[in-house]
Amino acid sequence: MAMLTPNEGKISKGEVLILKGALVDEISFRKLEALAEAYSGGEEEASARWKELLGVAMLTALLLLMLYLFLARFRPNVLNDFSSLLSLLLMWIIVTGLARISLQFGHEYLLLAPVPILPIVLRAFFDTRLALFVHILAILSIGLLSPEGLAMVFLHFIAGFYAIVSVDLLYKRAQLFVTLGKIVIVYVIVYTSLYLYRDTTLSEVPFMDYIFLGVNGLLTLAAFPMIYLIEKLTGMVSDVSLLELTDTNNPLLRELAQKAPGTFQHSLQVSNLAESAVLAIGGNPLLIRAGALYHDIGKMLNPLYFIENQSTGVNPHDDLAFEESAQIIIQHVKDGIRLARSNNLPETLIDFIRTHHGSSTVQYFYRQSLKNFPTEEIDLKKFSYPGPKPFSMETAILMIADSAEAASRSLTQKDAKQIEALVDRIVDHQMAENQFSDAAITLAQISIAKEAIKKKLQEIYHFRVAYPD
Image 1 (tube, rainbow, N blue to C red):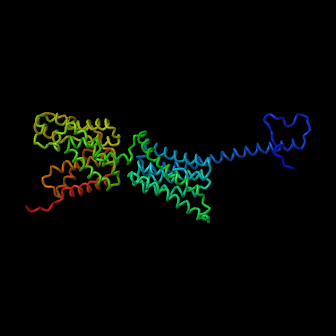
Image 2 (cartoon, rainbow, N blue to C red):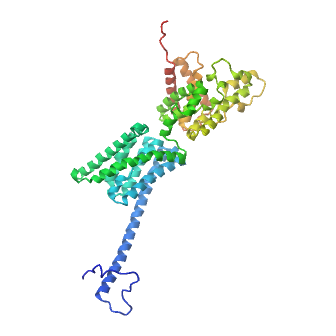
Image 3 (cartoon, helix red, strand yellow):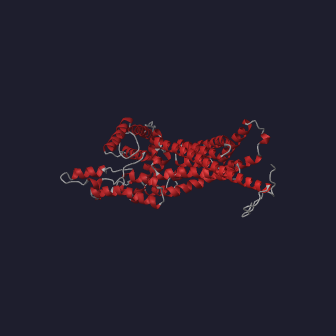
């Protein structure tokens, strides 16, 4: 049977092919057959499309299940934190969406999708292990969309992995473009290797593809405004912001150094102790360093009521009742929270201010009150901090480091034995008061952190050779 020509096969909207009772000629019959075939093909195509969508949905659900199981097993704190979970899923959706949009123009346009944005942004907020795992899941979902799935998965995996391991350099602005340039070079090397693997000569590699990879590197710059946006939307704080906040030229820290120099020096020492301890147990050193530097900023409002700032020998507490003195000491926590919020410090750092004394007691004035008024009933609440207790590994370590550094200044003999006994006594007392009952920290981690703090204090107070006159 002869095929219909384009003109013969054209059917207009509303056209009557065969009138009732009319004879069916050859052309009309072929038009009916073509129409039936077109409808049948459309139904098959729609059915195939629905099957494809169902398959993609099921595979995506499996990837999300893998993410859930990983978080439940290794990062329950992220799973239970809405902001953290939202950030993970948001970045996954954004990167996958960019890849999907790129594919609308052709599979080669997938080279434009800035996939390294995902691991760079996640590494700014989370640890390397979590960033790498989510990156793998994301590129697997992208591979489902691409007609060259395995090749694209391999290409973006290598580039993203390099972005993760070199992300620290991205915090140094001078190295920013150098690092992104290296990511582009990694893309080019891997892409060229894939062509050679397919037994293709270099002359057959489309030059425009290399242009796309270069543009990809420029688009990766969007990671930095994206980090800022996530911070504003979720209240999370990135390592980039923490680095800026730990700069002692920060206006708030400069003000602390001017108004309460003793407290400023104490905060510097606490940050060193806390950082060494948290490094030993796998916490976030940048976070605890920042928290330590700001934990006592409330003291700058009444600096002379704190012994580290008293240089003239005059103690204003001598003219106050013990209860009143305790309330002034306790007030520095509330003042610190107020100062931090007025200076737009992130809530993550404010947590260190509100928890660094937990619900402990201002021991000196409480004991003085008991000693001087033995027959009176002393209200312990008036000598106790309002809390809350530390509720994370980092806030718990800061409490230990803060108490250990302050108490070490009172030692008359700062040798290894005295320092070890002091730190043991402080930690035992804090544990007896259940100060760590709400913190995500184990007894083993407390023990390791305690040893690290002892070692650091011994280094600070190391013996010096007596110089001759």
